[in-house]
Image (cartoon, rainbow, N blue to C red; front, side):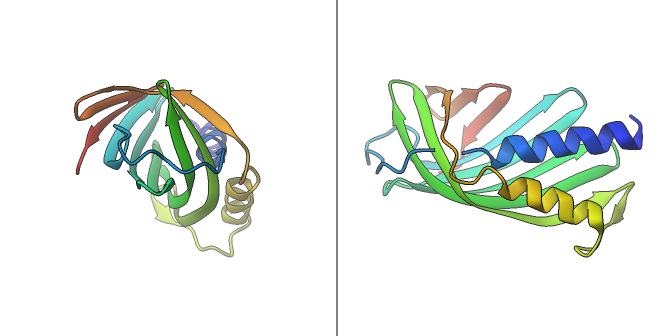
Length: 150
């Protein structure tokens, strides 16, 4: 994958992870409560994430997105609720902790790092919803396959 195309894919992936919605407390009996490790792949981009959905309606997450020799790592948190098989969430915090371009660490002072960071912040507070299928300790959401960790 070319460097330009890889960068474009990473930008889109960061934007996708920055989306989020609804500040409603979760049901403590929700099958989503707990820590989940998720993986997925789409168009040459690999995703590895953890999500800790807490009974109080908040969550924290970590993400690693890789495309070729480029990768971004970060995290975030926000609020969530799960109704009728649909996860509604609002991402309230997002971090960009590490950016690797062409296999080399990129400093936070780099203009491309700054652009990725700004893009990760643009959609904080935006409502999103996604269907999630849960069977025991396995969940499927879009292109992500998740396994309950606790």
